Image (cartoon, rainbow, N blue to C red; front, side, top):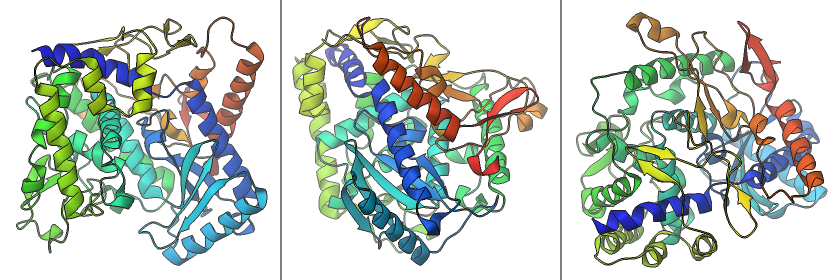
Length: 493
């Protein structure tokens, strides 16, 4: 089919254009450190730590992605549970401190949101700050772990979010979907395609995650991490499971096909990634009474609806965007320029137009990228750094290790958390398996990646490396268990 032949390299070019570069990591680390300095100056927040979450932690952010940050209150080693009023007061204190410090733009306090937040911009990065948002932190880790089952998940999320922004349907403030909801739609698509790529999320964690975030933080995170690790390992090692080898272009078009009639389906059915099924709203007592135009259940915080902001009018707009894009993509005699107009915003089109065609490939479900240090695009001679081996897909590394490593993470553990996946040779071993994932963009790896040609200013590079190393030392302290490095929260040192 001509559509797939043209669309496949187009999607690769889009991914190369929107994936974060080295400086995108550096600037976010700097914002986190600067906010930490501000928080340290606030008396009411003495002992608190600053932890990123959201797409930055789950490795689902683009070059222009927002930065979500949680200020975690000091509560010994226990998970804190501050009330809404206290969170509002603390964010007001942060707002005053930011104004006094200066240099923070577009400050906006939203106290009456479901989760009170403080919004601002720093270094052109839009940031949302909340208090004790352990729910957000844990959800971000789950999305990061899910990506290790199949790396096409990350590529699809990035592509779908960019497409949604292009059609102005990715803004809950105007009554459309938030980025987290689009991530859940991709999960649901991967659960319901044939053969399935992802399992129902209840097979990864059988309980409501939020209910289990109690007590000692390290213990709670370790318990959750070990259960997820064992179940993910079991799923991946199931040799009787049919393997889906669809290309990225096939998955993207089938995503649009699946949700083509979402406006009519939403009147009776809800999307449930926990069970991996369309669920009848009238027979699901947790969802009644039906008061939403669209229901996408949060699998980690049931029965919350992540699409609660979507209005009836905007549901129609979402449906029209899906239908229009689907029609354009499957119409004969399309070229890359016409595809780009439907899939990306103008600035992404300009980036793609300014460099050679993609030299990555997608074969049999595996995304193969160019090796580290190989020049690939733009007049600035930037070097793309994802590693092009089967062990490094979508910038992440999986290692096999028999030891149990403590599944606890530090700010911004980001992404840097490590989930060890051991071979599931025997069912009795599954309970002691943990997952170990380290992205290629882990700060300890960034120093070896080049952002420019050989003429790049070495002084600038040394300065960036100093920032990275400083951040790594402050946010991601090492310690060892059974001779193996692991992560732990700064508060647990």
